[in-house]
Length: 446
Ligand SMILES: *Cc1c(COP(=O)(O)O)cnc(C)c1O
Ligand SMILES: [Zn+2]
Image 1: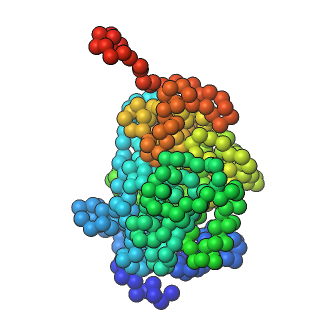
Image 2: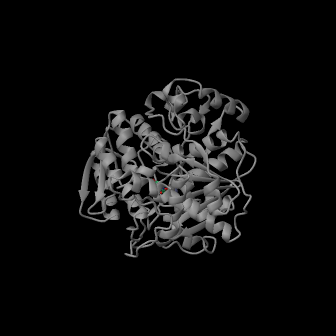
Image 3: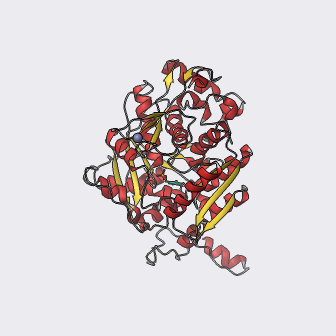
């Protein structure tokens, strides 16, 4: 532990890892290469920041850093480094200027959902196009600190795209494992382009995860899967940046899609810590939206999370980023949704597709999983859970270009649900085939 005390990052005490299981709460140094609690197998989390400056001082400092040209101050994650205090030296930081994502408003999208006003925080503006970058900058920086040369994850999606970029930027070797036949090309293309060594394994997700764990231990590879507690620390800054952008005015609701539930865990942790440390004076309610056929957390929370958690054996949805049947972070998500007085909702494929087209038609655009937010808001308004004049922030998690195939099919009436049901092209905008004839085209434009 002594090495922490001589860290060169000034102004805060470094955190330790704590087991999330309330019956255990074992503590470990942040330099231990562990992914679960060695004693009980529970999830791990970094302890709350111990600040040496007041919230007022830090709010001022964080605002001032936006004016600096140094890479870590330009980063929308590391600008808030006092709040994610696991590193002992800034020299380990790997940044691609992640975060800094805009707040966008759309009266049209608000009207669609039945709200007076809605704000989108668009994480698709990140370097690799999703919020995974907020976490990955921390995960890869930790790999640097641990002097790991190789990093790995099991993913066909945004995690692999992000890990590949950050690892390669750091001079590390990214290794990606993907299940056979289950590939999302937009995201995999990024991983290949960013130089990840990619193994397609003839096994299912859980089997591959077990395989990778064995390999990781044997070969000294650092795992960057979604339970990595440092990735969660990085994703906390999405909420810190949001509050900073709103001059610390807390919204009534923060709405986000739920897959593995790492993001809701990060948001809830950030909000609780900001409240406990005096940065904000209340908590927003978290609303987690799942796709109907990949909704184990929704089902679990129907009775407030008192029963047993049942995973979904064969999750289905075209919103591949939330196609998760066994969300690893559910115990954390349960705490965060409960603490904030939050809710969990589920939405159909058609509801996601139509909400997505509305977000697109507002000039904003997002990938399918992100659109679950607006679809969920519409349902919560109809159900009377959310009020029409509520102050609502919806977090759009990924970029519109992640899934162009889905978009083209929706607009041309060729999008089928995973069960083979043709979805309606409710807000379709299909290309029009015309002859090379100005009069005919002019007639169509009248
Ligand atoms: C990873 C991801 C999600 C799901 O986030 P979890 O932390 O797994 O709940 C949602 N949307 C996009 C675009 C993602 O990449
Ligand atoms: Zn434990």
